[in-house]
Image (cartoon, rainbow, N blue to C red; front, side, top):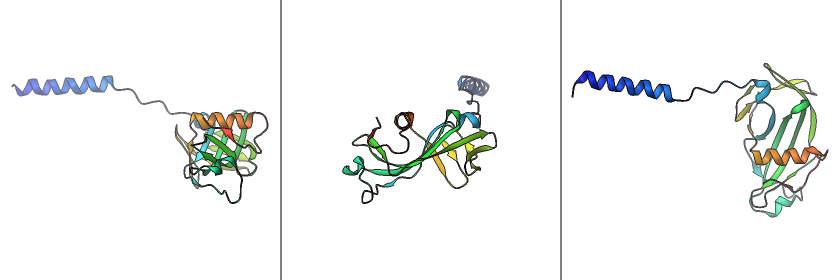
Length: 161
């Protein structure tokens, strides 16, 4: 086979491959990216000797924390128990709420008025001391329901499915 034909064929294939690949997604503005529910990236066994949450009756009970940066500048954080088997989640103690503002410099939660997060992408929100992961649509819906009617201070057995 002629070397020049092979070279031209490879060049054409490379050009076609480059033209048919998807362009990179445009970056998401930090102020938009941060909105939503976020979960700690490490779970722990449930503290069932201290709480009597419905999830404690399941062997797969796990404890984690959440943060919510919601529309209107509402911020929530708390610790919850969750069971994949029972598909429920409950707060371990009362959640804490505050307000927040998001700018390109980061998220400021008030009080205490300090920047809480500085980097965000579709999956991770990076803070100065840790990262959190975006909640799945299932968890986000459950947390939306739990905070919708002013019950965010304490919820038990919220359906997470």
